[in-house]
Amino acid sequence: MGRPKKEKPNRADGTYEVKITIGKTLDGTPIRKSFYSTISKGDAKAKAEAYKINYAVKEITGESPEPSTTTFKAWALRWLETYKKGSVSQHTYNFTYKTPVEKYMIPYFGNAKMINIKPVDIQGYFNSVNNDGEPFSESILKKHKMILNAIFQSAIDNDVCYKNPVKNITFTKYQEKQKRPVYNAKQAEILREYAIEKAAHSIVILLGTGLRRGELCGLRWKDVDFENQCIHVRQAVSQTSGKVTIGKPKTKTSVRSIPISKDLCDYLGSMPRDGEYVIKALDGTEPITPHSFSDWFERFMRDFSAETGLSKLTPHELRHTYGTVLRERGIDIYTIQKVMGHSDISVTASVYVHNDLDVLKRNMGL
Image 1 (cartoon, rainbow, N blue to C red):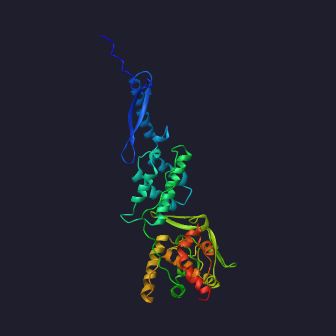
Image 2 (image 1 turned 45 degrees about the horizontal axis):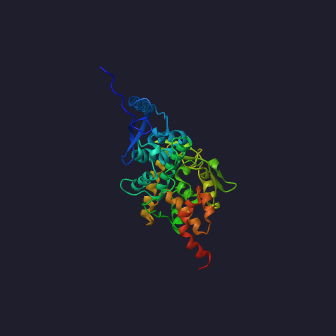
Protein backbone atom coordinates (compact mmCIF):
# COMPACT_ATOMS: atom_id res chain seq x y z
CA MET A 1 0.00 0.00 0.00
CA GLY A 2 1.43 3.38 -0.98
CA ARG A 3 2.25 6.29 1.37
CA PRO A 4 -0.65 8.82 1.77
CA LYS A 5 -0.29 11.84 -0.44
CA LYS A 6 1.25 14.79 1.42
CA GLU A 7 -1.17 17.66 1.95
CA LYS A 8 -0.24 20.83 0.10
CA PRO A 9 0.74 23.97 2.08
CA ASN A 10 -2.30 26.18 2.72
CA ARG A 11 -0.41 29.47 2.57
CA ALA A 12 0.94 31.33 -0.42
CA ASP A 13 4.42 31.43 1.09
CA GLY A 14 4.56 27.63 1.06
CA THR A 15 4.02 27.11 4.80
CA TYR A 16 1.32 25.24 6.70
CA GLU A 17 -1.01 27.15 9.07
CA VAL A 18 -3.27 25.85 11.83
CA LYS A 19 -5.56 28.15 13.85
CA ILE A 20 -6.98 27.45 17.31
CA THR A 21 -9.21 29.42 19.69
CA ILE A 22 -7.35 30.42 22.84
CA GLY A 23 -10.04 32.54 24.51
CA LYS A 24 -12.73 35.15 24.05
CA THR A 25 -12.94 38.91 24.39
CA LEU A 26 -15.39 40.48 26.86
CA ASP A 27 -18.03 40.68 24.11
CA GLY A 28 -17.65 36.98 23.29
CA THR A 29 -15.56 37.31 20.13
CA PRO A 30 -13.20 34.30 19.80
CA ILE A 31 -9.47 35.03 20.10
CA ARG A 32 -7.59 33.00 17.49
CA LYS A 33 -3.90 32.13 17.35
CA SER A 34 -2.01 30.73 14.33
CA PHE A 35 0.77 28.14 14.30
CA TYR A 36 3.05 27.58 11.30
CA SER A 37 5.28 24.87 9.92
CA THR A 38 7.42 24.43 6.83
CA ILE A 39 7.26 20.64 7.24
CA SER A 40 3.58 19.62 7.32
CA LYS A 41 0.15 20.53 8.58
CA GLY A 42 0.52 17.78 11.20
CA ASP A 43 3.63 19.51 12.48
CA ALA A 44 1.71 22.80 12.79
CA LYS A 45 -1.06 20.93 14.67
CA ALA A 46 1.53 19.45 17.02
CA LYS A 47 2.79 22.96 17.80
CA ALA A 48 -0.77 24.08 18.51
CA GLU A 49 -1.38 21.12 20.84
CA ALA A 50 1.89 21.77 22.67
CA TYR A 51 0.87 25.40 23.14
CA LYS A 52 -2.52 24.41 24.58
CA ILE A 53 -0.89 22.01 27.05
CA ASN A 54 1.69 24.60 28.09
CA TYR A 55 -1.06 27.23 28.37
CA ALA A 56 -3.14 25.01 30.68
CA VAL A 57 -0.13 24.28 32.91
CA LYS A 58 0.71 27.96 33.20
CA GLU A 59 -2.90 28.80 34.09
CA ILE A 60 -2.83 26.27 36.93
CA THR A 61 0.55 27.32 38.32
CA GLY A 62 -0.10 31.04 37.92
CA GLU A 63 2.97 31.53 35.75
CA SER A 64 2.72 33.54 32.56
CA PRO A 65 4.88 32.70 29.53
CA GLU A 66 3.55 35.71 27.59
CA PRO A 67 1.33 38.72 28.32
CA SER A 68 -1.78 37.32 26.66
CA THR A 69 -2.10 34.47 29.18
CA THR A 70 -2.47 36.66 32.29
CA THR A 71 -6.06 37.15 33.39
CA PHE A 72 -7.44 40.20 35.14
CA LYS A 73 -8.37 38.10 38.16
CA ALA A 74 -4.87 36.65 38.52
CA TRP A 75 -3.13 40.00 38.17
CA ALA A 76 -5.59 41.96 40.36
CA LEU A 77 -5.14 39.48 43.22
CA ARG A 78 -1.37 39.56 42.79
CA TRP A 79 -1.45 43.38 42.75
CA LEU A 80 -3.39 43.42 46.01
CA GLU A 81 -0.97 41.02 47.67
CA THR A 82 2.21 42.65 46.33
CA TYR A 83 1.52 46.35 46.18
CA LYS A 84 -1.19 47.11 48.78
CA LYS A 85 -1.20 44.52 51.55
CA GLY A 86 1.02 45.76 54.34
CA SER A 87 1.53 49.19 52.77
CA VAL A 88 -1.69 50.57 54.28
CA SER A 89 -3.63 49.80 57.45
CA GLN A 90 -5.63 46.57 57.48
CA HIS A 91 -8.87 48.55 57.62
CA THR A 92 -7.91 50.65 54.56
CA TYR A 93 -6.69 47.54 52.74
CA ASN A 94 -9.97 45.70 53.31
CA PHE A 95 -12.43 48.47 52.55
CA THR A 96 -10.62 50.75 50.11
CA TYR A 97 -8.86 48.10 47.99
CA LYS A 98 -9.78 44.46 48.64
CA THR A 99 -13.57 44.86 48.69
CA PRO A 100 -13.88 46.84 45.40
CA VAL A 101 -11.52 44.42 43.63
CA GLU A 102 -13.15 41.21 44.83
CA LYS A 103 -16.79 42.35 44.99
CA TYR A 104 -17.03 44.40 41.79
CA MET A 105 -14.00 44.25 39.48
CA ILE A 106 -13.19 40.53 39.43
CA PRO A 107 -16.85 39.51 38.89
CA TYR A 108 -16.97 41.89 35.91
CA PHE A 109 -13.58 41.28 34.22
CA GLY A 110 -12.84 37.85 35.69
CA ASN A 111 -10.74 35.65 33.40
CA ALA A 112 -10.51 38.18 30.57
CA LYS A 113 -6.88 38.49 29.53
CA MET A 114 -5.25 41.73 30.64
CA ILE A 115 -3.94 42.38 27.15
CA ASN A 116 -7.42 42.09 25.64
CA ILE A 117 -9.21 44.59 27.93
CA LYS A 118 -9.85 47.79 25.99
CA PRO A 119 -11.02 51.29 27.01
CA VAL A 120 -14.52 50.39 25.82
CA ASP A 121 -14.56 47.52 28.35
CA ILE A 122 -13.45 49.80 31.20
CA GLN A 123 -16.10 52.34 30.21
CA GLY A 124 -18.66 49.55 30.19
CA TYR A 125 -17.66 48.68 33.75
CA PHE A 126 -18.23 52.23 34.97
CA ASN A 127 -21.50 52.47 33.06
CA SER A 128 -22.85 49.38 34.81
CA VAL A 129 -21.26 49.16 38.28
CA ASN A 130 -23.70 50.01 41.07
CA ASN A 131 -24.49 49.46 44.72
CA ASP A 132 -27.51 47.12 44.83
CA GLY A 133 -29.10 48.97 41.94
CA GLU A 134 -28.21 52.47 43.17
CA PRO A 135 -25.45 54.50 41.46
CA PHE A 136 -22.22 54.97 43.36
CA SER A 137 -21.17 58.45 44.37
CA GLU A 138 -18.59 60.21 42.23
CA SER A 139 -15.99 59.84 44.98
CA ILE A 140 -16.47 56.05 45.08
CA LEU A 141 -16.18 55.83 41.28
CA LYS A 142 -12.96 57.85 41.46
CA LYS A 143 -11.58 55.29 43.93
CA HIS A 144 -12.51 52.45 41.55
CA LYS A 145 -10.80 54.30 38.71
CA MET A 146 -7.71 54.85 40.86
CA ILE A 147 -7.55 51.13 41.66
CA LEU A 148 -8.02 50.00 38.05
CA ASN A 149 -5.46 52.53 36.86
CA ALA A 150 -2.93 51.22 39.38
CA ILE A 151 -3.63 47.59 38.43
CA PHE A 152 -3.04 48.24 34.73
CA GLN A 153 -0.05 50.51 35.29
CA SER A 154 1.66 47.85 37.40
CA ALA A 155 0.83 45.32 34.66
CA ILE A 156 2.57 47.54 32.10
CA ASP A 157 5.60 47.90 34.37
CA ASN A 158 5.80 44.09 34.59
CA ASP A 159 5.28 43.46 30.85
CA VAL A 160 1.88 41.87 31.43
CA CYS A 161 0.21 44.28 29.01
CA TYR A 162 1.28 47.26 26.93
CA LYS A 163 -1.41 49.92 27.23
CA ASN A 164 -3.44 51.38 30.08
CA PRO A 165 -7.14 51.39 29.05
CA VAL A 166 -8.24 53.39 32.11
CA LYS A 167 -6.73 56.81 31.37
CA ASN A 168 -9.55 58.59 29.51
CA ILE A 169 -12.56 57.05 31.21
CA THR A 170 -15.48 59.27 32.26
CA PHE A 171 -18.41 58.69 34.60
CA THR A 172 -21.73 58.84 32.77
CA LYS A 173 -23.90 58.50 35.86
CA TYR A 174 -23.33 58.74 39.57
CA GLN A 175 -25.18 59.60 42.72
CA GLU A 176 -25.26 63.31 43.38
CA LYS A 177 -23.29 64.20 46.47
CA GLN A 178 -25.56 64.68 49.45
CA LYS A 179 -24.82 67.67 51.64
CA ARG A 180 -24.07 66.39 55.14
CA PRO A 181 -26.19 67.84 57.93
CA VAL A 182 -24.14 69.94 60.36
CA TYR A 183 -24.75 72.33 63.24
CA ASN A 184 -24.03 76.01 62.97
CA ALA A 185 -21.96 77.73 65.66
CA LYS A 186 -24.98 78.44 67.88
CA GLN A 187 -26.28 74.86 67.69
CA ALA A 188 -22.79 73.48 68.30
CA GLU A 189 -22.58 75.57 71.47
CA ILE A 190 -25.92 74.15 72.67
CA LEU A 191 -24.53 70.63 72.20
CA ARG A 192 -21.27 71.54 73.93
CA GLU A 193 -23.05 72.85 77.01
CA TYR A 194 -25.30 69.79 77.10
CA ALA A 195 -22.26 67.49 76.82
CA ILE A 196 -20.44 69.31 79.64
CA GLU A 197 -23.52 68.95 81.85
CA LYS A 198 -23.68 65.21 81.09
CA ALA A 199 -19.89 64.75 81.42
CA ALA A 200 -19.81 63.50 77.83
CA HIS A 201 -16.10 64.25 77.39
CA SER A 202 -15.82 62.75 73.92
CA ILE A 203 -18.48 65.12 72.51
CA VAL A 204 -16.69 68.17 73.91
CA ILE A 205 -13.41 66.96 72.36
CA LEU A 206 -14.98 66.26 68.97
CA LEU A 207 -16.55 69.71 68.82
CA GLY A 208 -13.23 71.34 69.68
CA THR A 209 -10.93 69.30 67.42
CA GLY A 210 -12.77 67.73 64.49
CA LEU A 211 -11.08 64.38 65.19
CA ARG A 212 -12.15 61.31 63.27
CA ARG A 213 -13.84 58.62 65.33
CA GLY A 214 -10.80 56.30 65.25
CA GLU A 215 -8.46 59.18 66.12
CA LEU A 216 -10.58 60.05 69.16
CA CYS A 217 -10.56 56.41 70.30
CA GLY A 218 -6.78 56.33 69.98
CA LEU A 219 -6.11 59.65 71.74
CA ARG A 220 -3.71 59.30 74.69
CA TRP A 221 -2.93 61.77 77.45
CA LYS A 222 0.63 62.06 76.22
CA ASP A 223 -0.80 63.36 72.92
CA VAL A 224 -2.34 66.34 74.72
CA ASP A 225 0.15 69.23 74.87
CA PHE A 226 -1.18 71.44 77.66
CA GLU A 227 1.77 73.82 77.52
CA ASN A 228 1.31 74.65 73.82
CA GLN A 229 -2.48 74.16 73.80
CA CYS A 230 -2.65 71.56 71.06
CA ILE A 231 -3.46 67.90 70.45
CA HIS A 232 -1.05 65.70 68.49
CA VAL A 233 -2.79 63.10 66.32
CA ARG A 234 -0.38 60.17 66.17
CA GLN A 235 -2.51 57.02 66.10
CA ALA A 236 -6.01 55.73 65.47
CA VAL A 237 -8.10 52.71 66.46
CA SER A 238 -9.77 50.72 63.68
CA GLN A 239 -12.12 47.77 63.83
CA THR A 240 -12.47 45.30 60.96
CA SER A 241 -14.67 42.20 61.25
CA GLY A 242 -14.52 42.49 65.02
CA LYS A 243 -10.71 42.74 65.12
CA VAL A 244 -9.45 45.89 66.84
CA THR A 245 -6.19 47.42 65.61
CA ILE A 246 -4.25 50.38 67.00
CA GLY A 247 -1.97 51.89 64.40
CA LYS A 248 -1.11 54.94 62.35
CA PRO A 249 -3.88 57.36 61.33
CA LYS A 250 -5.66 57.14 57.98
CA THR A 251 -3.06 58.96 55.84
CA LYS A 252 0.28 60.73 56.23
CA THR A 253 -1.51 64.09 56.43
CA SER A 254 -3.70 62.69 59.21
CA VAL A 255 -0.65 62.81 61.47
CA ARG A 256 -0.99 66.41 62.60
CA SER A 257 -1.16 68.88 65.48
CA ILE A 258 -4.46 70.62 66.18
CA PRO A 259 -4.43 73.91 68.14
CA ILE A 260 -7.16 73.95 70.78
CA SER A 261 -8.86 76.75 72.69
CA LYS A 262 -7.96 77.62 76.26
CA ASP A 263 -11.46 76.52 77.29
CA LEU A 264 -10.92 73.04 75.85
CA CYS A 265 -7.43 72.87 77.29
CA ASP A 266 -8.81 73.70 80.76
CA TYR A 267 -11.63 71.20 80.28
CA LEU A 268 -9.16 68.44 79.43
CA GLY A 269 -7.10 69.42 82.45
CA SER A 270 -10.13 68.94 84.70
CA MET A 271 -10.87 65.42 83.42
CA PRO A 272 -9.83 62.40 85.54
CA ARG A 273 -6.68 60.65 84.29
CA ASP A 274 -6.69 57.04 85.45
CA GLY A 275 -5.15 55.42 82.40
CA GLU A 276 -3.24 55.93 79.17
CA TYR A 277 -6.23 56.81 76.99
CA VAL A 278 -8.38 59.91 77.19
CA ILE A 279 -11.57 58.04 76.25
CA LYS A 280 -11.52 54.52 77.69
CA ALA A 281 -13.69 51.45 77.44
CA LEU A 282 -16.28 51.29 80.19
CA ASP A 283 -14.80 48.10 81.69
CA GLY A 284 -11.10 48.95 81.87
CA THR A 285 -8.17 51.10 80.82
CA GLU A 286 -8.08 50.05 77.16
CA PRO A 287 -9.29 52.49 74.49
CA ILE A 288 -12.96 52.32 73.58
CA THR A 289 -13.53 50.54 70.25
CA PRO A 290 -15.05 52.46 67.31
CA HIS A 291 -18.16 50.27 67.29
CA SER A 292 -18.74 50.63 71.03
CA PHE A 293 -18.25 54.38 70.75
CA SER A 294 -20.78 54.59 67.91
CA ASP A 295 -23.35 52.68 69.96
CA TRP A 296 -22.87 55.03 72.92
CA PHE A 297 -22.89 58.08 70.64
CA GLU A 298 -26.21 57.04 69.07
CA ARG A 299 -27.85 56.77 72.50
CA PHE A 300 -26.42 60.10 73.60
CA MET A 301 -27.57 61.96 70.47
CA ARG A 302 -31.03 60.38 70.74
CA ASP A 303 -31.46 61.84 74.23
CA PHE A 304 -29.99 65.20 73.16
CA SER A 305 -32.33 65.44 70.19
CA ALA A 306 -35.35 64.58 72.31
CA GLU A 307 -34.52 67.29 74.86
CA THR A 308 -33.48 70.09 72.48
CA GLY A 309 -35.32 69.38 69.24
CA LEU A 310 -32.07 69.52 67.25
CA SER A 311 -31.45 66.75 64.73
CA LYS A 312 -29.19 63.83 65.52
CA LEU A 313 -25.76 63.84 63.92
CA THR A 314 -23.12 61.13 63.46
CA PRO A 315 -19.55 61.42 64.77
CA HIS A 316 -18.40 62.24 61.25
CA GLU A 317 -21.04 64.96 60.95
CA LEU A 318 -19.70 66.48 64.18
CA ARG A 319 -16.31 66.49 62.47
CA HIS A 320 -17.88 68.42 59.59
CA THR A 321 -19.55 70.71 62.11
CA TYR A 322 -16.09 71.61 63.45
CA GLY A 323 -14.85 72.46 59.94
CA THR A 324 -18.02 74.38 59.09
CA VAL A 325 -17.79 76.50 62.24
CA LEU A 326 -14.16 77.30 61.40
CA ARG A 327 -15.27 78.39 57.93
CA GLU A 328 -18.08 80.51 59.39
CA ARG A 329 -15.45 82.30 61.47
CA GLY A 330 -13.55 83.21 58.32
CA ILE A 331 -10.72 80.64 58.63
CA ASP A 332 -9.13 80.05 55.22
CA ILE A 333 -9.60 76.73 53.46
CA TYR A 334 -5.88 75.80 53.59
CA THR A 335 -5.78 76.10 57.38
CA ILE A 336 -8.91 73.97 57.62
CA GLN A 337 -7.24 71.35 55.40
CA LYS A 338 -4.27 71.18 57.78
CA VAL A 339 -6.22 70.82 61.02
CA MET A 340 -8.72 68.38 59.48
CA GLY A 341 -5.91 66.22 58.10
CA HIS A 342 -7.25 66.11 54.52
CA SER A 343 -4.72 64.75 52.03
CA ASP A 344 -6.03 66.93 49.19
CA ILE A 345 -7.28 70.51 49.25
CA SER A 346 -10.05 69.50 46.82
CA VAL A 347 -11.54 67.29 49.57
CA THR A 348 -11.71 70.28 51.92
CA ALA A 349 -13.06 72.59 49.23
CA SER A 350 -15.77 70.13 48.17
CA VAL A 351 -17.13 70.09 51.72
CA TYR A 352 -16.70 73.69 52.84
CA VAL A 353 -16.47 75.85 49.73
CA HIS A 354 -20.27 76.27 49.66
CA ASN A 355 -19.85 78.58 52.64
CA ASP A 356 -17.58 80.97 50.74
CA LEU A 357 -20.28 83.45 49.67
CA ASP A 358 -21.63 83.82 53.20
CA VAL A 359 -18.11 84.25 54.58
CA LEU A 360 -17.24 86.87 51.96
CA LYS A 361 -20.40 88.84 52.64
CA ARG A 362 -19.78 88.87 56.38
CA ASN A 363 -16.13 89.83 56.01
CA MET A 364 -17.14 92.64 53.65
CA GLY A 365 -19.77 93.89 56.09
CA LEU A 366 -22.63 93.22 53.67
